[in-house]
Image (tube, rainbow, N blue to C red):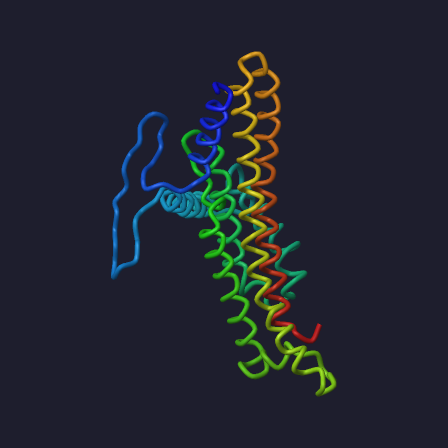
Length: 265
């Protein structure tokens, strides 16, 4: 019975840290957040929303700090930001969007990368929460990327030309009733893949770390050195995954936008 109670408390501990709440959990201190309802829609401020505000603030501060002192040779923090910007331009934007279109979409891709990155990393600091471990957040980000895909495709090819370009050329008329729904389904699976990939990876990492810590409460303090060692390894891996998933989300967005622009490829 005692072991069962410990398992239940460990499960509650994990759920408390990965689910969204209408209050901020700062250790033993729980700060209630405003409850707002507009036309029957719950518009309340939650912990994940606060984390997104913090991520947005960090994004703005990073931009201000890195561009405050302009010079031929940046140093320190500005140098790190420039290195990331050059990497996204040369290895993400240009290969997928082309030399002509890459500069147009660089501001969007840079904003997307740093916002996702900060949301990923905020969950690894004490009392922080991972907003990208919430499927509503990743679905919204994927929706924004999908809107950019459609907007870019229609802008470059025209409304009729864009949807016509979804169908392979010289396709027999008999196959059109089958191919048209499949092509539209393929278009819709792109934002779905963006949403689920980011959500699942960020959620899984935190569940593993919290589970390793929870083992201590179930099996006792004698396993704590092993659990803490594995948790530290996973923690370092989560930092890497935070950067990796921000890169993958940005890369796939650039790839999908490029496919909508250059439909002939």
